[in-house]
Length: 200
Image 1 (spheres, rainbow, N blue to C red):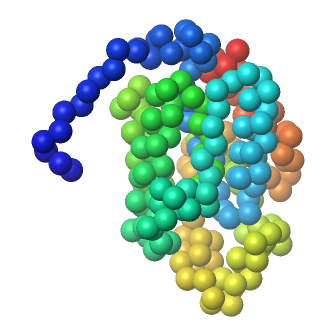
Image 2: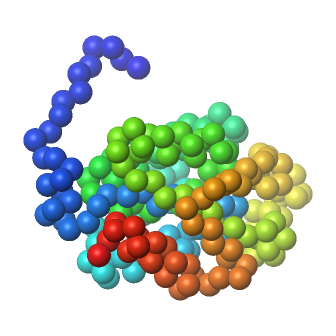
Image 3: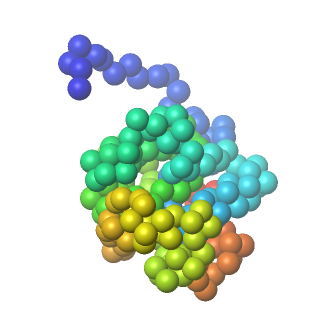
């Protein structure tokens, strides 16, 4: 990191943002295998919260690779950097009093812990949501045909097949999408936000 830089604090406080926007900033971090339902839930949750007149924004794993993270591959080092960047970006959104919904496989516990730690150090809440679907379920879904390609050896370092996925040990929310539909998943997350006074 450069040494000839100085952090320039603003004149708007977190309390002012919370008061005027009538909500608290929070990151809702959806993690799970490809095709587990992360992006589908994230889209529906964003729409639902917007209809509740909440300031909300969604960050999706594929989408950010078209811009911010287009220089990264899928090897372990690149995956680490991918999640580090998104951890920083989501922290900025949460600091602005936004409800930021992230949908990333984020397969490594240590990387998710780093993202959480960035928020904790900044005094910002971080809600880990384990979007849980077993391998046989996501392989049966396979909407992009990626599992089939991975099984055929056409895709290297594919999570769940040729690269590991480390399931969360104690997520704030655990949704089994083989048993829970999208509407119910959105309800579960929204109820959590209400119960913990992130929204009203």
